[in-house]
Each structure stands twice: as C-alpha cells, then as structure tokens.
Image 1 (tube, rainbow, N blue to C red):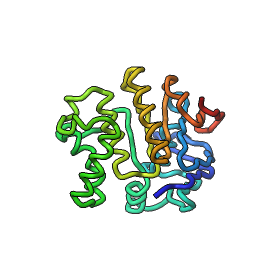
Image 2 (tube, rainbow, N blue to C red):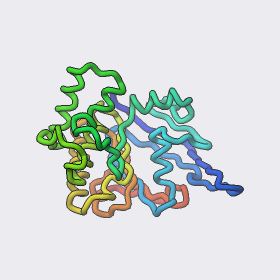
Image 3 (cartoon, rainbow, N blue to C red):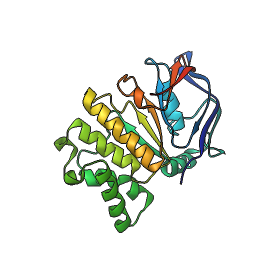
Image 4 (cartoon, rainbow, N blue to C red):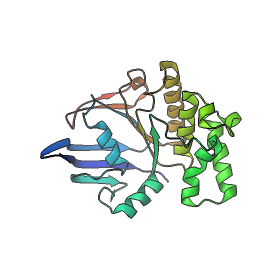
Length: 230
C-alpha cells in the first residue's frame, strides 16, 4: 500500500489558553507526493510539531481539510482516526519511546501485535526490518543496554515493521551526537528509497537538512518559505 498524495487545505489550529486564544496554525495548504523526504523547520512555537500532530492524526484541526489519497481523514471520530493511524502511519520520536522492560525484538513487534498478525508472519517481518537497521545481534537486548543511536534504530524498525506509507519523525536526531544523527538520517534516506516510504520531519538540526528533498520553513503557524534539499 502506498499513499499517492497528502493534501492539506487551509489547516488551522486554535488552542484556548485561559481567556486567550492561541492560533498555532494559520491556514496551512500543501501537497506532499508519495516517497517524499520533507523537513519542516522553524523556531520553537512556530507550529511545526502541531502540524505533524495533525498529519499524524494525533490532533484535530480547528479548520480546514486533510486528505490521504483523496480521503478526508482529518475529522474522523476517535475510532476512525485510530484505524487510519494503524493503516497509514509510523512514528519516530526524539525520546525513542521504547518500552524499557521489552527486548529489541519485542519493541519492534508491538505494531504487528496491535494489528493481529500471525506469529510466523510477525517473526519474518521483525527479522527483516531489524536486519535492515543493523541490529540483528541485539535482538535480546533491552533499551538500557543500547546506545542512543541503537535505540533510535529500534524506533525506526518499530515504525517501519508494518510497512506504513508515511513515517512522521519529530526531532529524531535531537538526543544524538552529530555523527550518529547523520548516520540515522542516512539510514532513513536509504529506507525511503528502498521502500518508497514518505518521511516527514520536524527538525532544528542543520546537519541533516541537506538530506531532504524539500525544506518547508514555518513561522507563526504559516509556511513562509520552501527550499529544495541538496
């Protein structure tokens, strides 16, 4: 399954803070094609994480429409949104979000357990993606036995194990040193080309933006500039 296009039309998001209204997004419209490798950049509070949360169906827009393959998914009920997330999306976070009591294998396996894959199918898929990210020798290790780069590789494997068409990566290199951060993004770029997966980043990291196909700059909830990566 692939997503031919993500399309946002005039997406707005308002938060109520006491008596005040805070507009985090002020009418974002954009189209992202299948297989894109895109970074959203901007200062803290610019709206980039809010935008990723809406694309990731973790938040609901105040106004506007969000389409995946022509289907308006942004305003579904809780059950529908959970179903869309399970079908279309994988997530990579800056804090890794691994379960400390589980091994590498068990952490990667979680999305397949949620969708009810049979044990033999689960094992085949887990082993394939763990080998892709270079952690086949660490299957029985727990997160506290891994380096930061290895933990982020586990998070990447977990995001990709169900082969989602879209992966959302919120500051995935923020807790990594420069060399490891570059290695992680190079890995994601390779997997992007290999699987045709669309990657959407929020990042402050100047060291990784050169890997992007497109960089979209957000200020005060609006896209103010776009650039082609190197």
